[in-house]
View 1 (tube, rainbow, N blue to C red):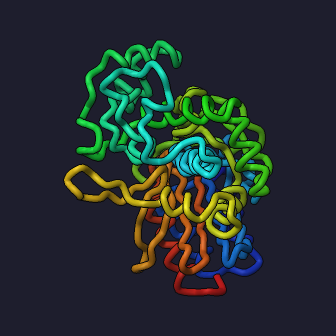
View 2 (cartoon, one colour):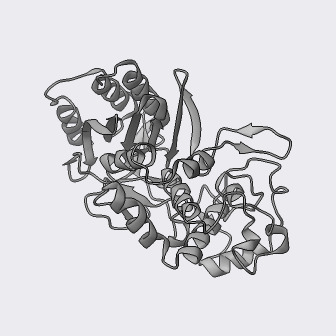
Length: 347
């Protein structure tokens, strides 16, 4: 391990001009033993910072670059929200439409669940995972899994509770494919990646062979690093599985919040906070986490305990932080970087 960490230290010290964000990132990398970090800051629709730090593969001593691909994991969910919004733009569905009207053959107890409830985790559906820590699903294969889910009681009455699960995104993927007539990956490539100018992005879980992707690790400050792997089957690509550069994610946020990838009315509807039947709300919209950094409203997501990003529309700012360490405090690092960018307009 020593040669890799010597290389990491050397590489994180070679920036031509250190700034407050660089200092923040390097400090976190040292404290958490994060091998690689990529940071992008977008201001007024333009990428003003695109920097990579450290080592993307410790065994092979591969430096992280601005072209390094990272696994977004659950940070793929905002892309699913936008895919559904694009269908809403076309009049093919409405966020508050019941899924029983759109997907035939569902259990009666599911029919009144709305599209919004699928995406904001208030559907009450049982989760696809029987043991999420182990990555074990209720059945293997989409059709067998759906049959198992059909036979499983609802976890909650739809709309009465917020519960993070992946089944809603499985059904959202079916919706996109049924209403568009193409596979989800093709839809996202044609309707999101290409219009946003995102190159090199792809789908695949941690087990997939993805060129130029960083290797993933678990462990860090309290023990040695080890490889980290987790499965995302194809039928859950709405929930997780996008691989992209930090700049690619920045372009996605710019397309959504600056360049009209989806209509403003659909975007505003998509970003409405989840509302329960008793009137309470949750800081989650249709694939987007709603949060505040320094009192400034933001919209984004985190995933795999290794990626986090968000847009701050009122400031016309977006921040992306991608790492290759599961459990390396990426949400705290994202917030720290965002605070610097919000406080320093030139950052």
